[in-house]
Image (cartoon, rainbow, N blue to C red):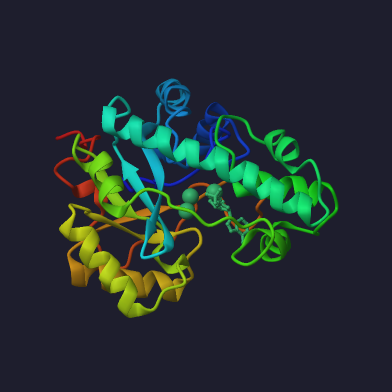
Length: 285
Ligand code: AMP
Ligand code: MN
Ligand code: MN
Ligand code: MN
């Protein structure tokens, strides 16, 4: 039987708008068979999601999406089948949280200087957990009428050279891969077509990632076009990477992106669930 996998999505533990339980129920409705919850830099939603998945009878993979700075660019590394109790992972996430909190205050300070006071409290009111994301600032700014929608608010306020953008250092690529890989998880380069980098740079990223022990490539993402999927599948084959697929669902507010509704892999792809270390082995029979 054809199984439906969605291995990248977000809950209120980071910048999604459904709670972990609501997200799992939505996945069950969408006939997803295996779901990975991959919140940004936090594992707080995994217990609730895992319990809800057991109750709903769907497969659950504990995951994360780690923010990385590589060659001054932000890159996201998804971890699948992570060990939540791995001390270096939690120590690293604590440092990322510290940076996020400092950055949040700094974003608010810069917005205040450009005439928008109260952004820290305003953004925090949209956060459902301890992670304060640019997404929460975006919700606050749209709510206050400073922009019409999420796309516009990012462009005008929250990207490089705009008042609400604060550069800084996330985890290194090596740290992120180690936190995931050392206790037996699988590291995956998230939405590879979303980075503003040249083809040469992307190949360099993949080369370093592989050398560090990274194994997966998100060939199919809800944010990828058909052409991007084809291109990424060729890169996965060329570098011998396992292919992953995930919607990057953040909740029902974004009408373009649906949980569990993904393009199939191009033929040459080897799915990440065929890895020896995939947590849910299919029943032999
Ligand atoms: P942060 O990790 O706090 O810097 O926030 C990054 C998050 O902002 C991403 O995970 C996306 O969910 C969201 N985001 C980034 N760019 C856009 C955009 N143009 N439109 C909507 N959401 C965006
Ligand atoms: Mn996000
Ligand atoms: Mn991402
Ligand atoms: Mn994501």
